[in-house]
Length: 179
Ligand code: AMP
Image 1 (cartoon, rainbow, N blue to C red):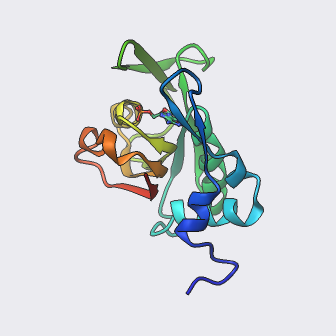
Image 2: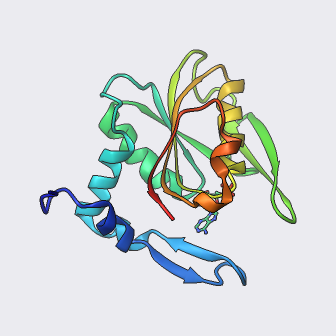
């Protein structure tokens, strides 16, 4: 039985709003702002994202642009770890490494600072949602190119029908809510 302090997966799920046809027709956007705005649910989400990783066991938490940042920074504070932003191309000011990946009708490029983590760092990678897996795969590639160990990739939401996990083969992957 969950105490009021300890929300059930169903309660987290109910705090995620479906917005049809955003940002374009045919996409059902998973809006996490109701969850973020609820102190108890936000805290429980961060605790669950870092579950299994004791403070001191992770050197850095990397978050993916942009909603991943919201969880990665909170997680980093709790773990006593650094926080690393993985951003869309053109946003990071210093020298970067880039990775491109294909979308349905397009391609996307993300970047990390070349000195974001020292070689051999243990990094936890966080994003809000796993869809096709292209973004997370590219992010993990960037960390690997810097010589980091991606200890786990964690998501608040996984859209299972899109089989994004297949793209992340070789990495431990965990999600808190699956649709
Ligand atoms: P993908 O590379 O296909 O796994 O897409 C994952 C990225 O796109 C994440 O950073 C998500 O925030 C965003 N994303 C993809 N689909 C959705 C969706 N239905 N609702 C909200 N965000 C999404």
